[in-house]
Every structure is written in structure tokens, then in C-alpha cells.
Image (tube, rainbow, N blue to C red; front, side, top):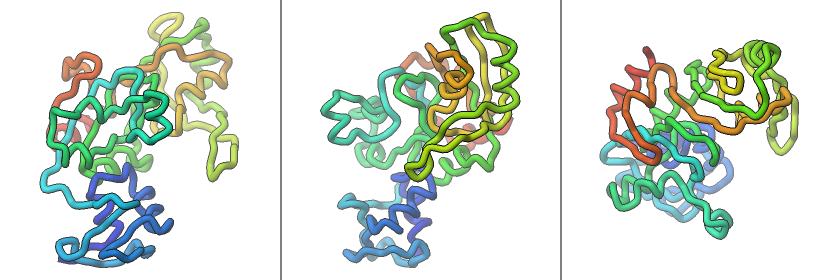
Length: 253
């Protein structure tokens, strides 16, 4: 059965977004049957031709797996490269090593990312379609974080986050100013707030707070849509298998 190349790549679970899969094709990093292919709509039969990404053989998972992880601090949400290994960095995927089939482990990706110092709810899967269903900004799914900050929280800080904050982002190696979308804010204490954002720029919550003259000391994601980490009673670094149906049902609540 034939399939378009970009659809095949998205379903392997190797890429965290459709754009990354397409860029890999356009950059000439994908070979099909030993030949570099730069057409994302190229059709082929994966049972008859092997696909490689930078020398790594890609295949469609025989079964999709879904995990809810309580991410600990000190681990990153990507595969470890040589430089990171030399710095003794650890990956969230190392938490699964020796506990699940190695073929499944190699196909896992995170649904969105949390930076190294951020803890809390993280969905990990080899189902590329789930990544798009949740992480795509057009889905308008809120991600809620509990923050502890270094300075007393002011009404001005809360008001600014609710209406939008100007932060610097890097796009195509160019730094530009970006106004964040309105967010939901609840004050917990003089030094703690709960923030729900509906987009996911790199280190966005930290940058928003820093832009307003404060600093995040602790950042913990508590929920994605209606999917709450507390439901699973997981200690830091622990994970639990879940079904796609339950994940999506809870997110949509």
C-alpha cells in the first residue's frame, strides 16, 4: 500500500511536528530505497522500500504507545547529542530505558517540550498524529503552570500576563519582538501564581515573567487542557501508560 512521504514520516513518531518532518525532506536528510527524496508528496510502498533519516532506519510502529510522565528537573526533552553527552546531560527517554521494548523507545517523542529545569506533566508517545492533535497552536489547548517567583507578585504583572507580554523570540536566526497571546492567571500567594497559556514559544513563561522584571524560581506544569497530572499520583520521574482515547477525552474536558 502506497503512502505519501510526509505522512509516513509523521507516523513514525520520530519527528515532534509535521513541519520538522517536512523540513527533513526539504533539507535532503531523507532517503527512500537508497535515494535522496526532497518531495514531501512522493508516494511509495514502505513494505518494499526502506526509509532512512541521517542513516537511521525509520519504520511505522506496529503498536502505538502513550505515557504520562511526571518530568523531573535536570532532564531534557530531546535525544542526547555528542555535545550534551559530554556535559553529562540526561534525557527523559533515559527514564524508560530497560523498562520498555527498545524499538518502542527509539520511536518515542514528547508532545511539546519542557525545558531542563521545568517539572510536571509531559505526554510521550510514538503516535505522530497525537503530537499534532495536542501541540498544534491551532487546537487552542491550554497548558497550565504553577510558578514560584523571586519578587512579590504585583497587580501589574498579573494584568500584563492576562493581556499579553512583549518578549524576544528567535526566528530563522533573527531576534524579533513578539506579543504573547492573552493568558489566564490566578494568584496563589505573594510569590506564586498559576498561568494558563494557549501557545508554546520556547521558554515562554519564563521569558514573560523576566520581561516584567521578575524571575521564575520554580516552574511546574500541572495540566494540558483537562488532563491533570494529579489524576495519576505520580512521583517525580514516574510514568504511567495511558490510552489515546482517555488522553484526548480528558484534554477536551
